[in-house]
Length: 151
Image (cartoon, rainbow, N blue to C red):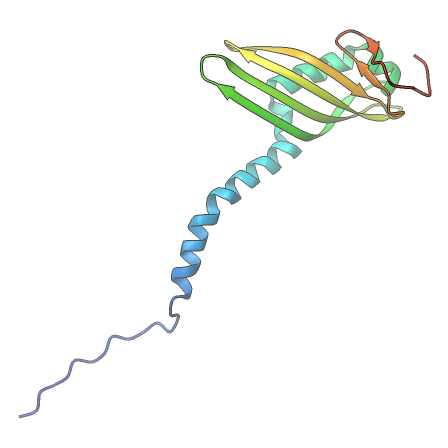
């Protein structure tokens, strides 16, 4: 009497390839999501940020910024954003944004705090095309700068 041997299970032929790729995808998914959100924020999301919208309006109406950059000043990009949150105390944000006007381009360093739902802009320092730094909160040229054009 012969005993029938069970047939071996068919193999897919992929070995551990799909298992390794699946584990790698699970590990990289959070990094990809954070990177995608950061890229979106730096290129488009800043337009919806309440602090940056308020700063955009303030800069557009600021006489010093208009003298340095010209008319129709707008934010063209966010080059840096540092955000911190402390429960019960609120948030603190530091932004670096690029601005463009009808005559020139510059950068703006912003510090703001949000306490109990209220955004408070603490400082706005404009760096003009000549390298001079202008304090837009106090409408002064910061010491140590030698602007090539006077305002």
